[in-house]
Length: 169
Length: 305
Image: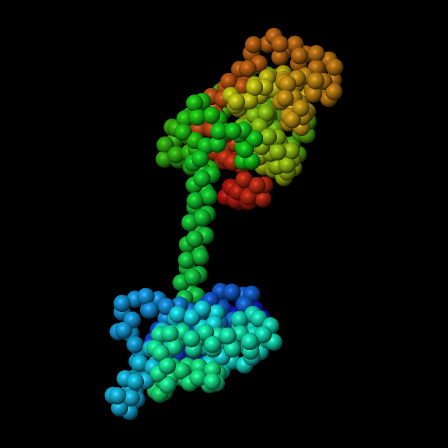
């Protein structure tokens, strides 16, 4: 594959961001193999969108990756197979801890799947370590309003969580 | 209540304890594979689209005139439409080829005394046979143009392509040109225009009349007043003779009828159509391609002499 834009080094961008993107997706879908597939899909979309290549490619590809992950999450939520795909991350020291951690992850994922997609994207991007400026670029909003949007998203997350599981702590 | 911290705690549950290293090299290979497949799909899509376009051009018979690629004979007047370019005459059947080649000589205007064209070929070695022909009789390639005076594409061909063809090939002695009349039934005045042109040809003014007819096509095709358009350019004596012939000479249609019979034998269904005669083979080309493409085709034939 040759790089289309002389000013945009796709190869370097890919190697700089791939692992982080894949992990971001992996946190959401809980399936490493699927996460890597979706990460490739996100970069493929970037490759096919010359207009997205450039200074804002980072935000663009993170937003795309999170969107793909949430779509996957919602697709699974609608599927009867969901419970069987609860993720490979059962590597905690004891079976009880592993079970508790897995259950906690699934609860968070169900809540995210039920949230407004834009709010879920925002929370996931933020928890993936993106700064306010990067977040603003990723979701295409004014940096000054990012804080407000995050606050609302957090509030919505908490309400949805309590609605589904009650005040467990 | 610190909602910020509360949410972060929940979201932190998504982090798993295991050390997972996404495989970037494998992902890169997948991307390359996707790219390769997409390119293949695009190539197939383009090829399919191109084939579909060619198929449409070749097999769909337009019903109306003023088509950008020529005027088509109505279905009731002719057999099935021909493809873009009919195959070269069957070289495995010399008798058929000879019969086809022999036909033009039969249909040439027998009643017409030979009249040299306005611009005599530079390398001509033998005179052309009649007013419908131009160029050297010894030219290796024959180009027969079937046209209808009321066909807009024919007018465009005579305006844009014919001068180039004459300058590059006819005057150079490489091509012998033959004009054939193929008036289509949907054109009310096409046959009358052919009568005027042939009458003018018998008075030595064929090229002038043909040029005028095509240039003023938009005017006379409205009401059929062809005479009004020819009168300003033909000498008065010639015009009188032409007028008289068009009104009274029954033989004037003979060459047109013969050309139409030849066109039917060539499988014509549209104008303008070019028939290239080379080494005894007749290649029907319809629609006529752009001049650069036609030029490359003729050059290729000449290079194979």
